[in-house]
Image (cartoon, rainbow, N blue to C red; front, side, top):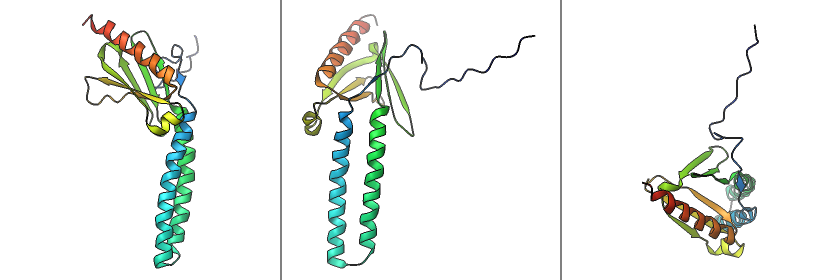
Length: 171
């Protein structure tokens, strides 16, 4: 008799682990997130400092310590969250993954795409980044790929648009 083989471990977020070549987003997105965290930290610390100077007392100082601790924690999480983003272009669909605690895997068939947006806010532009947003007929669809260099964002937009038009003709 043969021995039973060990069970294969299947990860629902890696449905095709051997065939998916994940592409990461730019690590410059970490700096964009850290600047946002720093701005909010300064605003909150300013408010707490004003409260301490006007009213006095140690609770304001504890609040400032809590804000600083939260800012450090958010910075660590932001860096890890950016590294969790990835996308993969396949023959019939685009895969987008992200998330640390709650992981998301979106599979967007090219034939279901209605249009593709490329956006870049002032901070993203300063770091040479853009976001590709995919829109489908489903209202809940929220597939987006942030932190791409503008030339890669344009290439991805053009490719997705062309593939979407090509696949939609067969419907």
